[in-house]
Length: 250
Image (cartoon, rainbow, N blue to C red; front, side, top):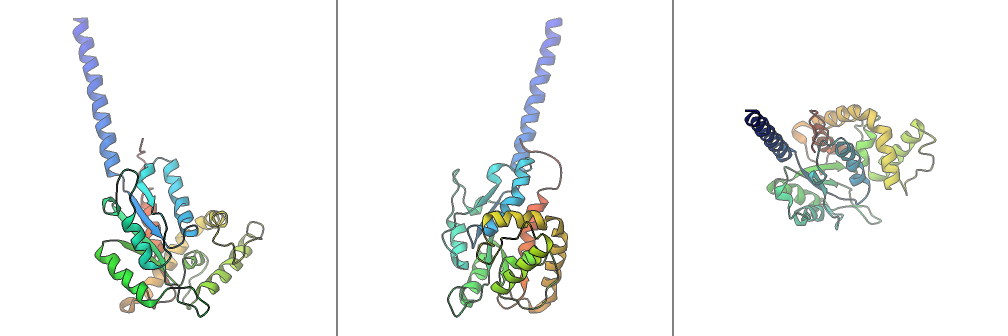
């Protein structure tokens, strides 16, 4: 009798373990995965990695749930190509991910070189929609998202003006931390990490400002010509939503 009782207990333990493993597997399958391709190879990727690193540390996502495609191009259509051609070590392509994003700038062409053509920018918006890829775009540059952490901006600004104003704001906020920042090094990984840490407490302000700016264009919404404009906040929201709930992934 004692043996039969212990067998029942042993069997119940095995069943409980099977159920626990089943729940863990189901949870892993529900973990949202994200793949993105960015126009620059340092600044924007570093910023988004800073958000995701906390999620990884807290085991809210698995290490293969967040992928940044290998950057090979800097023009908008090339960034989309990088996303579509990327294949993970496990063989996944962009089509296998729940969330698919490209991060691009309007970066109007400059007389001294650089920037993107209007045609290339508009083409990638149409193609991304066909490919069911979301676009986080900024007119004129990604750093506008940073600037919106300080103020609501409704006046058109080009890349150099955005960076100049941002550097001034950051140095006013924390003179010691940003003393050596300038237009030549602002996009370096070390300064991007400092910017992330400094601006994180102001993220809700930036969200409100970015949404207000987007809504201000109404029926005249056109990412190519609307300056200033950013939709980076939409991607940030997707990443932040991974923080919802307190179930960890083992």
